[in-house]
Length: 122
Image 1 (cartoon, rainbow, N blue to C red):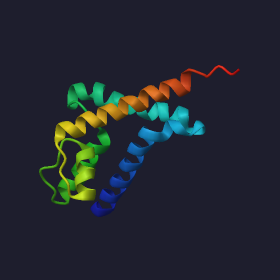
Image 2: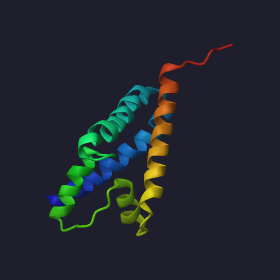
Image 3: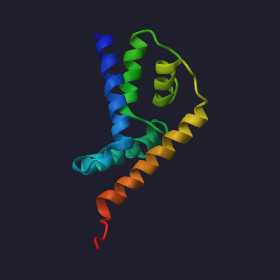
Image 4: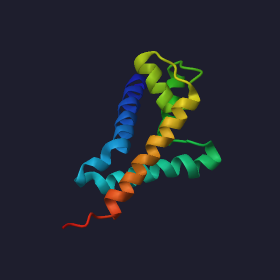
């Protein structure tokens, strides 16, 4: 059961990350994308006040599962975890944090643009 939960969290979290980065591209998904990227940033910066900057409840729940499976010394960043899990490479934490926040903010700004500012035709 724990292994199934690990696979679920890995798959779900990866899909959420990809959707947060690229969901603004597909017009039918733009409102949903704006909601998910906004909730993600709210989790990082508002819940982060109490739980630590960059807090994500999905990461917290996945870490609980991984600890039950015997994983210890997990990184503070889920992106670092994914990179290491997929490639074996352990990226520098500051590098990952900088790219993560940079791309998330870029996706948020683009989402605002495509959702609230229309092109003038003609």
